[in-house]
Amino acid sequence: MTCKDKAQLPDYTRRRLLALAAGAVAAGPLYAQSPGFATRPVRIIVPFAAGGATDVITRVLSEHMAKRFGQAVVVDNKPGGGGVIAGEAVTKAAPDGMTVMLGTTSVMLSNRYIFKRMPYDPLTDLTPLVRVCLAPIALVVTADVPAKNMQEYMSWIGANKSRLSYGSYGIGSHGQLACATLSDIAGADMSHVAYKGEAPMIADLLGGQIKMGMGSLLSLKAHIDSGRLRALAVTGPRRVPLLPDIPTFAEAGFKQDALSIVGWLAIAAPKALPAEVARQWAAAANQAVASRDGMARIIAAGFIPVDDDTPEKFARAWAAEGPIWGGLLQAAGVQPT
Image 1: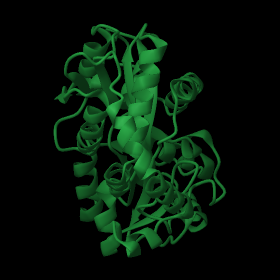
Image 2: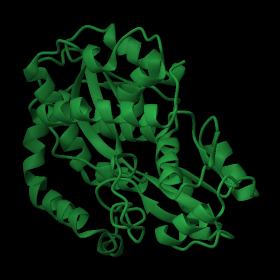
Image 3: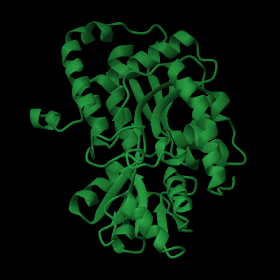
Image 4: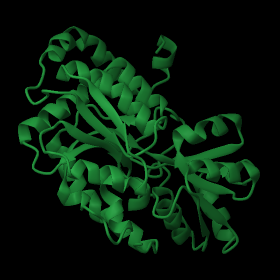
């Protein structure tokens, strides 16, 4: 990361990088303190195929964790089933810290409200360890939409009641929940078009089949930069380093749960994991995120780094956010299948 790049980052990110530089001398001895539980190669299960943002970040962090643990850290991709396959593999593993999952909010929380039958309950069969980053999404419209900000957008969708459709990357996705909320506020009665992933949704946005949608910043940024799509707001508590000029929904005056809540990428283990092992995992993950390349890759992927989480803080957030996601899915009319 160049000096120019650092200058363009928000203040909190610049402060974090300066803290990293100041603490670099101390990092070496910490890496030498291998946790006692890591007696063989450690496995991180990822519920997505290789090459995606979650997989890439996992591999970057695993390199640092390997130094901390004194053992190889193997990334095991188990895509499919909306993350259920990966989740089941983790819940069946021994609670010794040797097998964990790095997954998303949907895999670890909202799946329990989307699927009628699951082989495990994320809220009771997993141990929350640590969040590695927040995962905001952005509302975008096509270049021909006459809305430059959220106020103009709400007026536009309200004036076109029952005539507009919005896209999301799947039924029950955060994108659907957020757009459904905006539609309700404006009385716009918009239709939801659920795609099997972000790529086909973006293709239809660029092709003009739909006028708006919500997705990850990494997938949308190139089209925002080119001017073919216009970003109006992002979810979450603060602006995102990748798109620092785009306001949060809260800044634009919208503080409803679906617009203020934010997803995350996080590490979880089987239930009954010893508390000391959980703390060691959290320390390793925090240090990996705080590394220069860890933080740079997370920011470049459109996420907000989290390098100061603990199992206790994450457990409180996990318990509090589960019912919120469940309520949002119910309000949006998402029926468990």
